[in-house]
Amino acid sequence: MISRRRMSVLLLLPLLMCLAACKIDSVNPISPLESAQPDPALYGLWRHRAKGELTYVHIGPEFSLRAGAAAAADPRTRIVLVDHKPNGITDEAHVAYASRIGRQRYLNVVQVDEGRPVGYLFVRYTLIDANTLRFSTMNEEALKAAIGAGRIRGTTRGDGLASETAITAGSAEIENFLKSDGAKLFTTPVVLRRVQDR
Image (cartoon, rainbow, N blue to C red; front, side):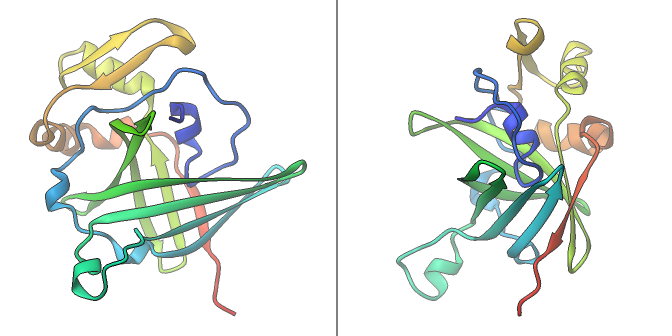
C-alpha cells in the first residue's frame, strides 16, 4: 500500500520519499463502483518532467481476457507509472474508478493492503485540452479541518506525519460534500502532457 505522500505524486511527480503509514482519503468511493463509467478521454500516454526526473503515466482500460462488449463493460481504469530517475527506473500500477459530480471529474484510486482493498484516494482532474491533463490530490489538512468542523463524517488519529485522516461517510454524502467543498480540498494541480503518436 502506498502513502498519501506517494499518492500526491501518483500520476504526477516522482516520489522523493515514502511515508511508512498507509493512508486513504475515504473508506468509501465518491460514487458507487457499480455505477462507474470509464473516461476514455484519459486513455493514452502522458509525461511529466521535473527536477531532472521524467515520469510517464500510462492510462487505459483494465486488461480483460473477455472480448468485445463484455470487456468494454469493465469500469476499472488501469494506471501505470514509470519513473525515470538518475539511479534507475521504477514502476507501479494502480486501479481506479471514475466519478463525476456535475462537470467535475474524479478518480477513486483503490488502496490495497496485503492484497485487500482498504479504501480510496481521490484525484481531481481536468482535461484542459486533448493533450493537457491537470491532476490534484486531496489536501490532508483541509480534509482534517472539514471533518473537525463536522462538514463530513470521518476520523482523525495521531499527529504530524503519523496522523491518519479518512472520510467514513457514504458515497451520497461524499458527493454532496464535494459539490460544496470540493474546490477548497485539493492541492495545487500538476500538469501532464500527452505523448503524441509517432
